[in-house]
Image 1 (cartoon, rainbow, N blue to C red):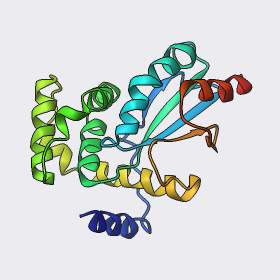
Image 2 (cartoon, helix red, strand yellow; image 1 turned 60 degrees about the vertical axis):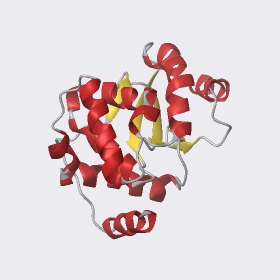
Image 3 (cartoon, rainbow, N blue to C red; image 1 turned 120 degrees about the vertical axis):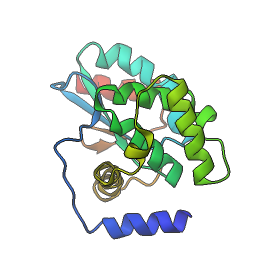
Image 4 (cartoon, rainbow, N blue to C red; image 1 turned 90 degrees about the vertical axis):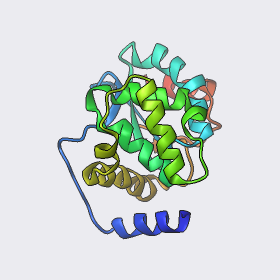
Amino acid sequence: MKKIFLILILFLGSVTYTNAEIKRIISGNSNAKITIIVYESLTCSHCADFHKNVYPQLKRDYLDTGLAKIEFRHFPLDIAALNASKIAQCKQDQSLEILESLYSNQQEWIRGNTVEQVNESLKKFIKKAGFEVDFEKCINDKKIEDFILNDRIDGAKKFKVNATPTIIINNEKFENSLNYKNLKKTLEKLI
């Protein structure tokens, strides 16, 4: 299944799509001096750990204070992550809430041995969490799928992203060990 996914990404790599209707999932001051881009996959346990242990501190110290903004970009590592990304990206007014909920409750919805089983777990989780999302419409939305896959393609091309999470700060790849202390050192130099 991973081979099919990678072939699909490579095939789409030669096609560029833009859609003004689809907005990036962003937190913080849109005019901030510091832009942090996080390439992540919704099935990645390290990404969930970032959202649990690093993002809240970044939010408190840099995003809520207006010093920085963070853009969450998609880098799905499998079909389950792609489908979860579609759900997160689908409801523009709640995208950040959905994204945070999916990471906070990752073990609850990634259950299943097939894509169909994981999709069913995801669908049940979204409903239980109270998000009003037309699941089938979101999963089958080709514009959203193209937007997500283009994030992955752009990340690989521009920043040589090959693992998640990958952090980019003001267009420079963050190469240190990913923890709040190291991020803070880098960010403080940019203020």
